Image 1 (cartoon, rainbow, N blue to C red):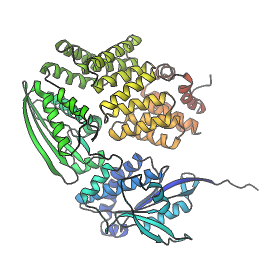
Image 2: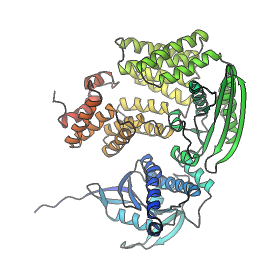
Image 3: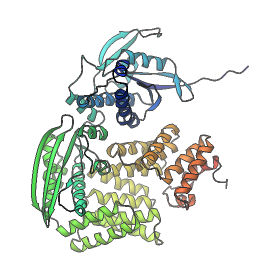
Image 4: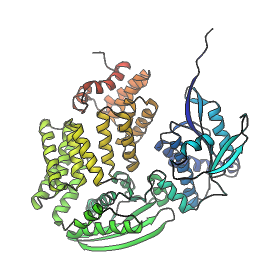
Amino acid sequence: MTTQQITRRLAAILAADVAEYSRMIGADETGTIAALREIWTEIFNPAVASRRGRVVKMMGDGALVEFGSVVDAVECALELQCAMRVRNSAAQKRIEFRIGLNLGEVVIEGDDLFGDGVNIATRLEGQAPRGGILISDVVHSQVDGKIGVAFADAGEVRLKNIERPVRVWRWGGAETAPSVNEISSLATTTSEDKPSIAVLPLDNLSGDPEQSYFADGITEDIITDLSKVSGLFVIARNSSFAYRGKASDLRKVSRELGVRYLLEGSVRRAANKVRINAQLIDATTGGHIWAERYDRDLEDIFAVQDEVTRTIVAALRVKLTPAEAARLAKRGKIDPEAYDLLLRANQNIRQFRPEALTEARTMLARALEIDPGLAVAYAGLSLIHSVRYANQWDDDREDHLAEALQFARKAVEMDESEPRAHNALAVALLWSKELDGAERAARCMMELDPNFSGGYLELGNVYHFKGRHDEAVTFYRQAHKLDPQFDLTLQFLGRALLAAGHFDEAEAAFKRRLALAPRSDMTRFYLASLYGRTGRQEPARQLWRELLDIKPDFSVEHFGRILPYPEPAAFDWFVDGLRQAGIIAER
């Protein structure tokens, strides 16, 4: 006689359902289902993913979610209820969740979970207040003092089919519901205790569509200036620009980006004159905090950007450090033609094509002829050569790497306070396999620009290539938080999770990346490796066939040579997953 072994583990369990779901379905089935579908997609699933949760099952009007961290579970519940509170303040159809949380041992059967750990969470959900959260005492003991929210002691309760009473703690609900403003502030400061802001792309009002690069460049410069303020949490350019040209509901944008404040406006350029209209909005209320119009000569553009930054800092009551105040005060005028060339070059660099990079290189060289002291131009040239080296777009590959290092060091020499110079140096040193130097450059960059998602991304890369994968995951998660629309971060995150042996989380990250970038060859490479390592040979082979359809000349050997692992065996670990799937032969 054989006995099947039961698999158990400790997990934080979140149970959520919609209050009065049956009544709403009876009154308006189509509208309720449509509204709930939107909530799952735009609020619930992103909140769970951002806190590393796994949706165990969906039940029409509810869900069961597993977390490896109890702090993540509670912060996810708070984020959900905060986001729902903001949504309901503007929506015609109010939908409210009840959420219960427990920490306990669960029994694993396939992808499903059972046991008292799950049962208590679901029973707590049933007794939670509408729009509120009920947590067990064991959860409260783990998170007390670790999150910026106080739970009220709700005493002991009897739960169905649970032998002993359970002491519980409550947050939210009709009796203790905070105002919309308080809730929204909590939603954007649960994990970052500082004002959070996104700068939406400024509208081009120049009457010439060709001038859109100029409005985009001004927007990006303002984002860069704000991100250097350590007292702010600033969303990166990639994510802000996802809303370019869209007439979006500001409350929805606020929820999706995880910020409270939004800066929007317009740019009009005529010859060497520029007019900038800007307004700062509290997205929780839609109210304007301030609005201003700036009419200046183009050579004074830095002064305008500095004034916008100082005004926002004052409006949000953020204190500048002495170094931050000094950086804002020191910038002077810039030659209008050189500035225009910088903006055009940046637009070309972001296209990530060999021809566009060649054009950008010419523009940056011309800008340096006009102003040889432009550190950001040297930084741009360095990044161009790093990109060409990494993608093997030319025959003179080693020359590209040498020039990347030369230009990056020149950028730092020209202006040690320019974070983009240190970023270029970190990238060039990384590809040169000088990982310690790359780490130092990345940390310098982050000291100068604490909101620069690229800094966290580069540190994540350094730690991953050093083999410190769990530390890399931490940096990648912060980069994703600052730039949630930049899909490549998900590939890097999945790669580090896979190397650390967190297969379920890695698979989720890779699948999210493919949903955003369906033609990614490298994400398919890593996911195929994961499937090979977890015994799913046919899905692995299907991914490999798709990869070769996308990139017929894909070379495993090429990436083994170029990726900056100090030891070849580190990359061969991923390749071994392909061998286990029978995709490539044993050597």
